[in-house]
Amino acid sequence: MDGVKPVTMNESVETGDYALQGKKVLVVGLGVSGLEMIRFLCRQGALVSASDNRSAAELEDVLAELKELPLAELETGGHSSSLFRQQDLIVVSPGVPWSLEVLRQARTENIPVVGEIELASRFIREPLVGLTGTNGKTTTVTLLGEMFKAAGRRAFVGGNIGTPAVAMLQPDADWELGILELSSFQLEGVVHFRPRVAVVLNVTPDHQDRYRDEDAYLAAKMNISANQQRSDFLLLNVDDDRLNLQYRQLEERWRDGEEISRPLPFSCRAELELGGSFVGQRIRCCLPGTDGAGRDLDLSAPPLKLAGEHNRSNMLAAFMVGLIFGLEPEGMLTSLASFSGLPHRLEYVARVADVDYVNDSKATNLDAVAKAIVSFDQPVVLLLGGRDKGAQFSDLEEVLGGRVREIVPFGEAAGLVVRQLPHFCGPKAENLEEAVVAGSRLAHPGDVVLLSPGCASFDEFSSYKQRGQAFINIVHALGSGSRD
Image (cartoon, rainbow, N blue to C red; front, side):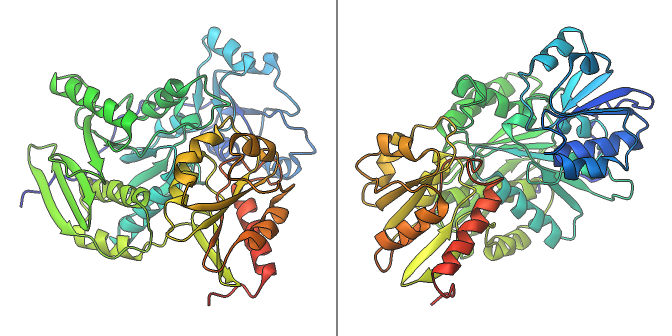
């Protein structure tokens, strides 16, 4: 069988890096990414300043770390135009809105403004996999990392998953490639960033508090392929209607000879002649090679620990990326069989009084909630709420009937949930603890109490992880917490 030409690890992707020695560089936002960028920039000899709109009291732990670094200037409690206008380069952390007036002013004065991903990519010499989508990003990059680790390949896994991409540039690092989870926020700042393989898993409404409409959100996601060349690959999930349209448009442009990446479709609903399919128990991949050769595989899928079409789609995308980078199919099938998912993503917690409790705190949009609901065969008591992000909860109606016994609305969004889904909701809960207790009373033996909030956690918690852990603790307090 002909093999797709694998990406070789000594292949350097041109990224247009530039010298930072003596340059005035401002880092905006002092989260995890901001701190890592400051460390990197200081190692490069830049004159680094930092700015955050949080107060010094809120940044107490961060400021303690910054004392060890040679900052030129540090401002907290807001952003001053004078500091921004002094810079040779401004680097924006992922959570910082690009609509800030001080950033707009800097751009009008021709001061370069880039994101953390863009900064890192200008210095990373190894091939990159860039992966984005509304849902499933963390699951897929984690699975990819396990596949490469099992194959003995040194793959950096980072980006939006928690470890900034710039951490790939540690002085003692010895990576063969980088696998980056990328949010739409991170992709807003792309200038030269060029992944060897880009993947878009799905695009459904999210972050409507940041984007003017769905087209703007899609455009941010598609920035992932803005700088790819014809020897690169762009994997698109054509089960998603918007990405199916993107694929058809890009395929036509590619065949017309445009300097864009080769678009490859993947599907869990239809067997495709080109790309990848995971239909029934068969995984089929037909991939073109950069040297004219191709690879055509038709394999039996192993039993999987994760249920749901969305998980098969994520696994198929990871499998295709692995093939492009030369991983052996048999080893990847073993990884698929052993992969049990992530904390806070359809995570089994306990069975209490014959009711299963499942933690899906990472589901912060309604598409993730819908996919969680249809993953269960038994009736669901759904805990839905938190801080609203502009979602239309009524969009869930088509998946609720016959599946969800009752919704327990909680948190800031509780009133909105009740107004939009009045026929499914029980009494409102003020907080998560009240919601879990109410859910336990509404559930029948054999039911699932599912925390799949569809909202941000910031009304009550600092992150979805803290919310998920709180749910776990509350459930264990209900009973023994052991699986029957």
